[in-house]
Amino acid sequence: MKRSVDEITGNRRMRRNRRFEWTRRLVRENRLSTDDLIWPVFLCEGKGVSEPLAAMPGVSRHSVDRIAGEAKRVAALGIPAIATFTNVDLGKRDMEGSEILNPDNLVNEATKAIKDAAPDVGVITDVALDPFTSHGHDGILRDGIIVNDETVEQISKAAVLQAQAGADIVSASEMMDGRIGAIRDALNDAGFQDTGILAYTAKYASVFYGPYREAVGTDQMLKGDKRTYFMDPANTDEAIHEAELDIAEGADMIMVKPGMPYLDIIRRLKDEFGVPTFAYQVSGEYAMIMAGGKMGFLDEERAILESMTAFKRAGADAILTYFAPRVAEILNDA
Ligand code: PBG
Image (cartoon, rainbow, N blue to C red; front, side, top):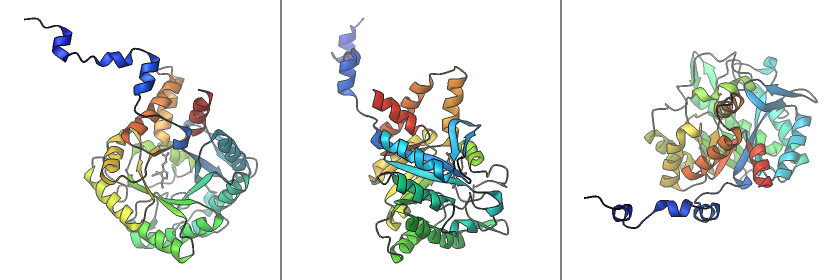
């Protein structure tokens, strides 16, 4: 016996709401706005320098004087915050990453410059040691081991220096145990109760960081991999345990990194904890979309916007993306 479609679906037709742009607009569940964007930027030494990155078309490293102009540009676009990453001269890198404890280092000088140029743009710095070590690891290396507690001590001091320079939020991307609590204590002891902490809670040992390592100059020097401190891409329960610790230790927001391959983790953490949860669309994700566009295999702009929507749908409150200025321009023009 052949039933009509209405008999099969009980008179429900999902396509009715998809018929017109205006119905699609009315029933749309997630909306992207410039309020959701954080722009990660790369810094380099020198004056008047903007160096394009081969693996990230459209992205450059900027010297401190140039980053001030970039900060003004994103302020005008309505982007709430910038996250800085540095490429210091190779001569300044050592086994301990001690340059991070120089109060006038590249990251701190850039914070001051951004705050001068665009006081209302949030500055998010990072305490990981990888841009400052001669081996490219995120912590102090002793006898082949990234030593946890000594690294935590060092990055806690670095967090205070970054706060002193004017950072609004310090982030911790190195995945050492106990780091969030130690940074919180150090900030409080130094009178920076109001400086926030963004925890890279679920940071995976991922191949998608490739272009970033070129950008900060660690690609040539990194020996081995980061699997003794970053998470195994096969794990998801482990992200819950990491989040429990980070939140208990005082994280103001948590993050999942990379982004698109880990949307399930964003959704799990958001559902489980309901705290501000950010996504990091990393350098390799940027490179893939740009490569697809350049090759003519996909529409670059639509791929960018669809990836942003995917983060919102997964539950991300904000997205760190190298596309931030471009997304803001598209949204502002719409
Ligand atoms: C390390 C760090 C990484 C990124 C930012 N900080 C990963 C790594 O090099 O292992 C990746 C960012 C990106 O790929 O866009 N502290």
